[in-house]
Image (cartoon, rainbow, N blue to C red; front, side, top):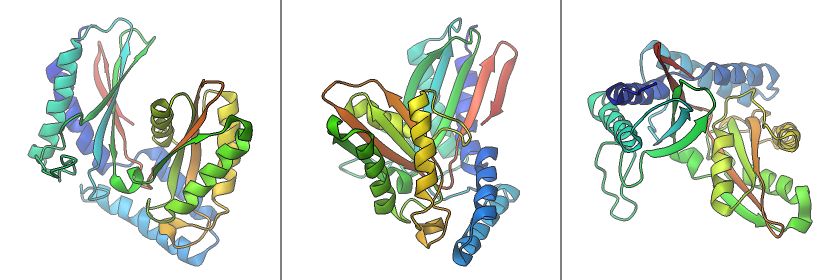
Length: 291
């Protein structure tokens, strides 16, 4: 399958706008689940306000949150897909710029030292573009995630001592959730990376944080850990918006990688309650949008 780069550019523009305005169905269901289980009156009221915000945003074609985030595009290329890699990158960047200028959206992206804002949501190394490959022969998939600073500022890495075992991982995750408190606009998805190198571990934590609710780690040990931690974090009492209650997190997600015999890195990256994402799938039949 040959990829039309103009089509990619148009889709990447549309993805950014869609992600900012329409919350994925799994997150809406996550809100309903927490709302049913919430026992704290304040927490119940806060959840009701957040659920109402989602409805109003979609009914009035407005943004779910004013933070347009750091734009992230995750690209998966099928085995029989023919595409100019550099051209693909430029098409994604142009689509991101056009979404910001033509819609228009607030640009949240600035230079790290001068703080200059080009008002394109783009800059050095931004948008973040991750490339992976899949066996689905004639498919190109692009997922767009706007990652807000409230969630991104709550990120941690610990190079744990292997002898401390899994207990060090669990303790670190719980400590991070408590330290974040209400700063991540909970309920959150707690993303945990375990293993790999320092940079891979942090990347895995973000992959985990942005996974759909209801998905599970492909590694059985990782899936076991995320089930255990998911049961624990909502007993911490942080609650919706940090104001107390049972609704601290939708879930804890874990991703793992093999690591060195003398290392045990663990990273935590949080996703806020507005866990936005959108996806475009390109096949010979055309382009399909979803989550």
